Image (cartoon, rainbow, N blue to C red; front, side, top):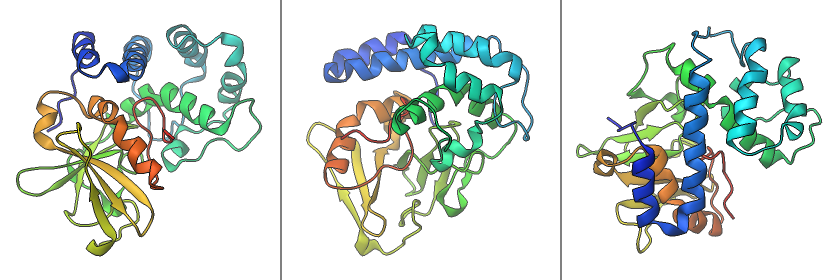
Amino acid sequence: MFNMSITIVNIEEFIEKKPHLKDALRLYEKVLEFRESVSGIYKNSISPEDVSYPYELISPIFEYFSSIFDIPQENLVSVIEAMKLGQIDFTRLPLNEVPSFSLPYHEDELAMILFLASKPYFLKLKGLFNVENIFWQEGRCPICNSMPSMASIDADGKKHLYCSFCDNTGYYKRIGCPICLNDDSSKINIITADGEDGFRIDTCDACNSYLKTLEIGLLNNFTPDIADLISLPLDIIAQGKGYRRNSPNPLGMIKTV
């Protein structure tokens, strides 16, 4: 079972150990603050038909978003209005589909804004289902249909997967790529890096994708989100070799190079 609790004190400890990742970890502090702030006003459950926030909560939620992430309100007007008009469907985000209509943002910037803003929605969505720790058919999260962001291998050789959108966990067959479902082991390789003990990169030459994998025992000390962030150097290595990440990290980033 993944350890899902994290505190600001813990983050300070990680910054001391990984000072080169200070900016990323400081931004993650804001992610946690936003989630906590929105949980105070977004108390009611959602239904499976809801694809965004209730109309009356959109402005209050984005007021928190603007304040916490230090983004001027005027820079968010377009996305707020689009959301109020029902033009933004959060359920499309795990499919790597950002709105196709014209918004004054670069595609990567818009994807990051929507990922961060939608996190409380996806956490609520997870609460509607009891499907944690089940097999991920087609390698995708059974709640939000996202591809995995991280993996781990337990003592029994079972591969566990983690979803960065709704925080759901599940498992997949030990040998095989959950991104393209390739099970030809000759096309799956492992990359390790000095200074990244307990972490590795699993690459698939069938789809040119990669998945960071860690020793499951490490999750006794930190969450999958923190594991993802403190292993950012592995993303740089994998993407520098031409492999693609398919699900965002806790900061909403897919591309690091």
